[in-house]
Image (cartoon, rainbow, N blue to C red; front, side, top):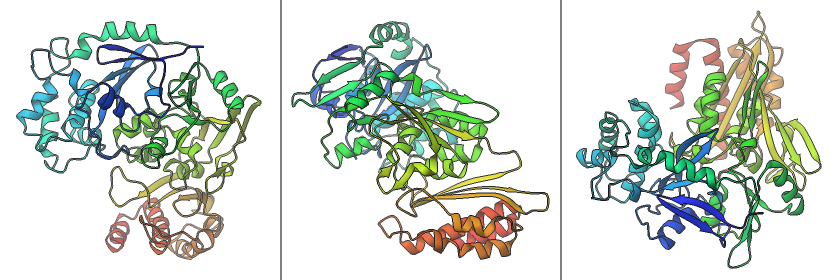
Length: 490
């Protein structure tokens, strides 16, 4: 049993033997280390002003990702390298190429958001050579600016792309071998357990087996993977969590297995990691991942956490349910697997026994001749929470008769839920405009949505019906009709 959290901050070794389980990285940087380049803008992972890099050795390689320090807990940082904007420039004051590009292209005005943009551009520069305009915009989805209109920042990204990372001017290239050696020395299979000044406890289990036994002893503990939701429990709702179990380091929960039958995703697989596989195997699912938060959120958040949290507006459950996914739960008593749709019982309630945690998800591979689509409806396209999200999976025979149909929605009920009445109205029928029009009315039997600040009940119900029509138009290959429908819908 280890008794301290150890990581590298820029070039300094950090060891913490006493720690508030929910102390955020941003508070640690600004209040305890006086590294004030990272800013607090929203405290909920939305604006990106607090963006830093976190590096970890995965599969023998040192990999860095942008994260939101405002909702990343210090307890999740063992055996990582945290890099802030202060580490980029040379000791003689020479700016890093990313910083210089921002100056040259006038990418900063008030400057509050600038350190976060610099770190996001730095993360992109490290991992992508000659990024396209779309790749640059994707990397900046999680950074908001009220001054520049973004165009100068995009130009800065394009300018710095012509300069490749090298030890001459990039600290992470210069220090890579040393950092790897230091992180390998910090890595441990021991379980870390320590308390804060007020006695609250955090645990970093050394293995999945230890996670199971720890949860058996503390069934009411809060399990934290990406903290993209739990972080807001602390920063916005001021919840006091005790104990807290961090699992983002467990590689056994981060595996992806692709077979002819389907895809198995470990519960700890991040959105960013899953995207690389899903966009190839199930393209429509990949496109959905691109619209979950910003890049920082996708780097931190996990699909398993999205499922375990059980939110009725979680983005991935509707798609997973439409694809007939199953979820595997694990505890010290054993393992059980169930259809994902059965996991969600009621608002805030899932079929998870005390001591159980989500271990993996299995997504059956859609047949080549089937049709699958998922639509996320939000007030703004990027980095927004769904008003509703609908997923459709359809198979027809040679005559055009519906032989398989699964429809699932989030944001329409207290849980992610199938539209069984709509499915029944379509099953065994020829896929025609008339069948679709008749099936639209069945939505009123499946859902009685609520009105909230994201959408009215009437809007949700009508939009769900319209998405069925849109899916039919896309499947039936009538682009003129689809274009007309889109204009009328707007």
